[in-house]
Length: 204
Image (cartoon, rainbow, N blue to C red; front, side, top):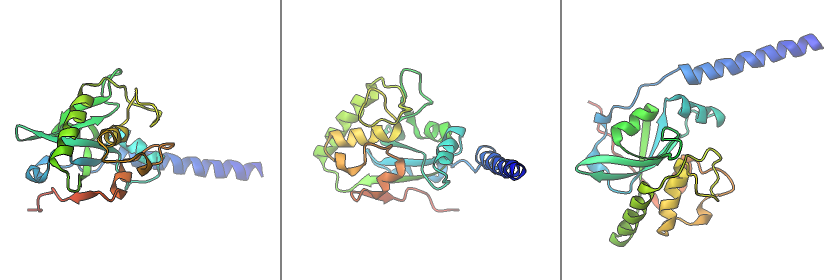
């Protein structure tokens, strides 16, 4: 009996090691920014990404899925360039909130795929309110929230940042998510007021 248990334990251990190696050593192709049509992107679009970095793969490994988006941020355009406001462990110890151009955003997590969502029928008034919240969070010092606690906002993780900005201007409601659990980026795909935007250039 003890011998069988040891054999089973070795098999399970081998499978786990193989799974970890698959996630952390296997590496997909990083997204080419030239394949993104920036003209189709608008201020306050939401960007969800799948990354090939160790951090992104760890998130996928925890959820036992390679299909989930591991990161999310809010887009604005400035001087014809696309920028993303997001919260990430790649920030400083005191502040996880970063404001990066799209290329830097892609490089941080070695993004292999992304999707852009847009809030339907966003009025001028709501755009003004979003700009104020966006600019306010851009200046906030908040460490990355490794506890994924939505009820306490002195520390902020990526989905929490997006949720807070849209909630504070009353475009999202508290009931849209179960705040007792982490808000995964893919949950925004289920919000009916967000529509997918095809911003990828056709393959040559």
